[in-house]
Image 1 (cartoon, rainbow, N blue to C red):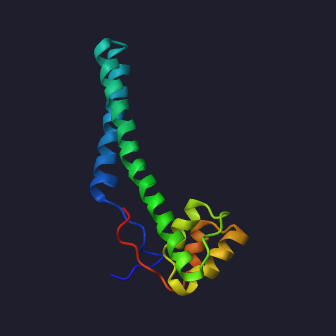
Image 2: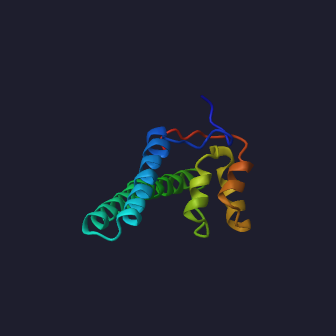
Length: 139
């Protein structure tokens, strides 16, 4: 499958749809339980457990993404150095560098310079890519 701007976002249905829906339903159910039964030890404990699950749900998603972001930043810095002999412009944010990973080798140097000088948003960077380099590993 060819990847491009229109289809580059990835969703994991089990996480993004099923698990997130179950977490929301469980949180709403725990809140309803506290409202219906009043403030009792059991309803507060159930609500606390559900809040812990919500926090874990969020952290399970954000921690691996942070690790992927660091790896992408290092990979793109190396790729830019190999292509140009210079590291990426320090003005580039991590989000901009992550967007630049889709740029082909021929356009990476120019697009990264433009992104830094014009402070392009990650979405604007992706829209300006003409030779899309697929990334099928990020979830």
